[in-house]
Image (cartoon, rainbow, N blue to C red; front, side, top):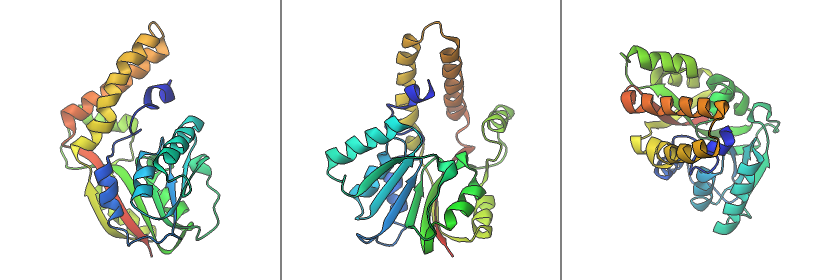
Length: 243
């Protein structure tokens, strides 16, 4: 039911093309021989933006086969299939040789393995001086109301502020090249807005099913919390370099 509800969205999490390009601009120009790994690619919206704006050889992975199939179709339609490969694989069990990639990309998915765990495990897959581009939800300011605090305590207790994450980045053997906050439009235009529309059709298909009703309730609560308290939290895009 989760994949049914989220699968047809432009993106499977907060993000937008402009932010992907802004992060890419912080990476030195890639050569046609550069190797890029997109972890937790979903249907590959950011993968295709990267392919259209760099000459790199891209491998995109996700654990949901229909997402990889959609990415493959889209890459073929855009004429970049020769440089974009999709693979069904669990990001929690990556097995790549050391120094396999010049750039690792992960929008909205590092939380699956944990921020520090991802930084530490993926570091060996980068060439020395290689780059990692990631987004992570963060506190933007203190003083969030109890309802907001309770929501994040349930959903992602590891949420922290940007200075704390920058300290973790340094401890894990990287240096920060740059970072910026995703705009509110990156949450709504390609994610929450389409998702809200999807929920109506989803409910109609699954009328009377308790599991579907519970999923819709959880998603509606998430959107309501964002509408009420988004000034307190957001996604931060980090571009960092392996020391």
